[in-house]
Image 1: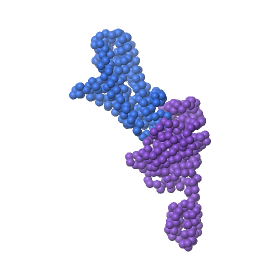
Image 2: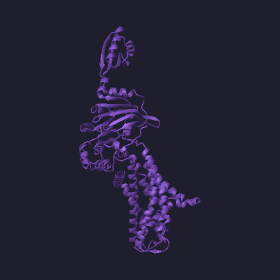
Image 3: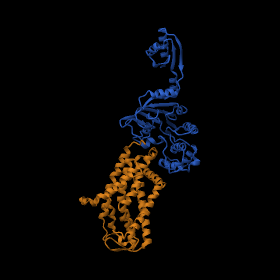
Image 4: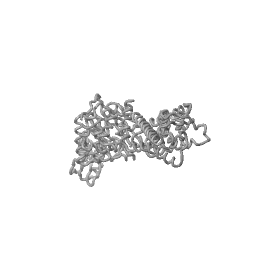
Length: 319
Length: 269
């Protein structure tokens, strides 16, 4: 299945200062996003962090209170059809017509698009998501995994350049997840941009090079997974003759971003080599005996939790 | 935009025809009135315009039934589809699926509205055809005595039946428009369907309040009898003209309000 060629060299997604509140409670607060063509971009955050509200705003389903959105340079709230051209998405689980067969669903949705491709695109999409054999069955008889696959097929019949998927692995068994990963990689190789939201880091780190992490409606990290891994590696455990005194010394050193006493060891996060050098110098000058300074191999999972759990409590809004 | 509305309209018809309740509505529109009339006949000859033709000719039978089912019959059919057509998609979450395709909100809503009106027209047509065929089988194809007491040929009466049913459909469409509005506003089928029925019954209730007798000609339920103009000698036109503008006056505000609300609404389900 080919991806519709795009004349525009604008970013697939560009959002600045997005904000949305429900009954006065902020669900999304100042979100900036920049997604590059052809990448699988991860949008991570715990449940209720504002991922789905952000995606709804991107697709024009929910009007932002503030901020701007551009999909391939077009505003989905001012030029809804222009901005959605070449864009497909699934918000939360795919919602399809349960009284129609899978194939009938695709025929209906394809008829809404009128993008110039023939109905053969329906069979291609069914084939790609491996649903051809069950395409004649009613959707009410489908498993959740089959519905997810049909949802993706419903996006593919639009021949999109950008696909937004909200927690697509929800309800999938391990084989289904592996299939989904393979499919998304394949689509990205064909030039499609994929914006993938998830609350599971493991799901995203297999596929994405760049991610945004959202917590309590705010972006707490935006960048490459490599940088995030590097950040994970900049923590140390210090064994020293007087840990309490070392704690206060470390806390005073510029570039030490986090310091805590864990048992008889000092755990510290450093911003760079200069900060690490300053710590060792301070300890030596204070005549403390340093037994060990060991870099801690934090998992990405832990960084994710640290970033998201240190944010204020999320608004009590289903988002 | 017209092309996209047509696309939405075609899609809505596709969905309507795939649902059992659509066919149940058609069945009710055809079988219901006949059952109702059979019950009425068991209690004695029906009263009202053209009712004295029962037993003599089957032509005009549909219009006798129309009088008997009053506002309740069309209100039920209109409410079931109009109240459901947007709300059911809202409840099922399919609205967001459709609204991420190449249709604007106006395209989708106008497509749904046209599909709703088409459904009502088809249901009324089915009702008319089945009632007429049943009447002709029972009492033959003979001349009919009109409301003024004059005899008109069976063919002439049959030809008048068609515009009569179209005129009858105008206030029914206005009731459906209100149901459509409730469907958009509530996003829930049960209150939208129930609210439409209550609305129709309330209009019927208002029509019997003698204190506002001067306003009666301009009430929606009174337009259900505008077709009488066609079966009088000489044929009138005042009731028909009034039915057109009164029905439009009742139908347009809820349709416009539904469009405005739907365009501003966040689809967050």
